[in-house]
Amino acid sequence: MEPDKPFSPEEDPARFQKEGALTRFARNQLATLALILLAMVVVLSLSTRTFLTATNIFNVLRAFSWIAIASFGQSIVIISGGIDLSAGSNMAFSGIITAMLLVEGVNVPLSIGAGLGITLLIGFANGLMISKTKLPPFIATLGMMSIVRGFCYGMTQGWPVRGLPRSFIALGQTDLSFFIWRVPVPAIIMVCFAVLVYILLDKTKLGYHTYAVGGNEYAASLAGIFTGKVKNIAFTLSGFLAGVGGILMTARLGVAAPTAASGYELDIIAAAVIGGISLTGGEGNVWGALIGAAIMQILRNALVLLGFPAYWQPAAIGAVIIGAVMIDMYRKKSI
Amino acid sequence: MSDTTVTNEKKEPIMALQGVSKYFGGVHALEEVDFEVYPNEIVALVGDNGAGKSTLIKILAGVHQPNRGKILFRGEPVEIPSPRAAQALGIETVYQELALIETRDVPANFFLGREPTRGTSGIFVDRKKMVEDTVRTLKDLGIVLPSLRTLVRYLSGGQRQALAIGRVMPWGGKVIIMDEPTAALGVREARKVLDLVLQLKEKGCSVVVISHNMRHVFNIADRIVVLRGGKKAGDRMKSETTPDEIVKLIVGAEML
Ligand SMILES: Nc1ncnc2c1ncn2[C@@H]1O[C@H](COP(=O)(O)OP(=O)(O)OP(=O)(O)O)[C@@H](O)[C@H]1O
Ligand SMILES: [Mg+2]
Image 1 (cartoon, each protein chain N blue to C red):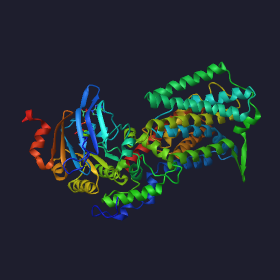
Image 2 (cartoon, rainbow over the protein chains, first blue to last red):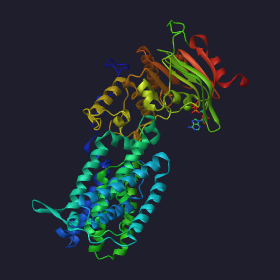
Image 3 (cartoon, rainbow over the protein chains, first blue to last red):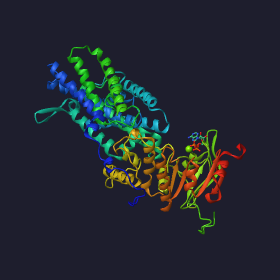
Image 4 (spheres, helix red, strand yellow):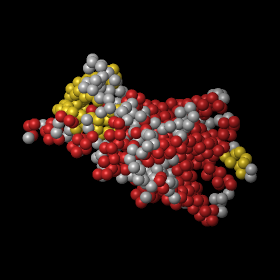
């Protein structure tokens, strides 16, 4: 457009200025979540003597890093308008493939590479089914969830794979020193992937297109975005990241069971949803999923520390999911 | 069509459909339609609801593929297999359904699908450039939006329409298609859009405008093409017709 004015511009340039910090804060689901998380930590620190111990914090960090990493992949898929129910099975499967190779004497990097490669391919297969045959993501990944779980049982004859080498187990159980802190390796890996996924979604063209496809697929395709390609990449990354989570889980547990991570797909999806990633697509970010996963894990931990039998955990988690989504919906209406 | 001497009387169309038909299942949205867009002219495409107007422009925009017939661009037969292919030919489209992403902010919608990138990698979005260019274009067009950070979800119907129109402007398209661009606009804003269409023509573009508003059509169009039930019912120079005649062509003689 040439600068000579086609219409007399009568707009107030101030209108283009950034909105106030308070509005931005109120609009920010993340801020609310962080506050909830902080409140939980404060309450637990005051009401129990064990919560704020280093051992407990590290256990929490370790336990939620697998779920969190898988939920980063899930977030990409949900933002692109899909859902990946096969994430839990993928976690178990990457662990089993890696463990079986390790037991055969294959070296650690190669075994991990194979485990991740398999789940990456499974994710790609999900993507192909959804973008090429137009299968709804719910159906395609529901089927894949069962297929992959079947392979977990079939390949192990139902037995856990044991006897993993120390060098592999170290991945899940070592702490690295940062000044006075010792931080579990899985937590460090989790933060690395969070940053990578954040950059992918927020800074790259692919990220912009992912939001566009999830926000309005038809509009995205009218704008020349290859929506099938975007979905394919999203599901492939979800498969891969579930694989990463599965390997860290296996390293931590020291055994690859075919029943591992059963039902985790719901925790993984819940982490994203609690974190403000709308199931209708096009909204949310990876920090939400991270905080969502942390909130769930701390809640589990709290129930244990406060002396509730573990049987009650699902009920509490369910209530949190519903509450978080209601708050999010209310916020969107009120602003 | 073989006559390539450019005279005022008979220029070669920049774009043409020849005998184009489009079916959606049993629905014959377009049947054997010929349609030309000449350089530097404003064509109004009119017709009742369901006449096939949007279907026709979506063939020009690469959204639909014709079941039969040919597309010519600058005299050459072409296929336009995707919206991106249309953009590459210099065809820019404002869709009736606006095609905005409600969950994204103004710059993201402004550059939807064509985000500028930093450096040569083509990977990282140049957000600063997006914001600056968006501000500049909106200002040039006199479009007022509450804030660039606003999600499109919170914009009014007219603001959305202004955004959808504004975002095709910076790309230097030679053929600009607008499907009911004034539908959601107030009188003043509609006037601005009509002015914009006239300016595009002054700059040498061709504009295809769909509208149900006869006043608007007769204000700006050089030529008026009427569709009825998927067939071309008339093709008139504005100087040689009247609103009455066009309305008769739209509804069909049998109804009068
Ligand atoms: N994607 C589609 N699938 C099936 N039928 C369609 C599709 N698009 C259009 N049609 C049908 O084709 C016919 C022409 O539709 P079109 O949208 O081109 O009409 P229009 O002239 O733009 O009408 P309006 O003034 O209401 O916008 C209608 O009968 C419509 O139902
Ligand atoms: Mg239409």
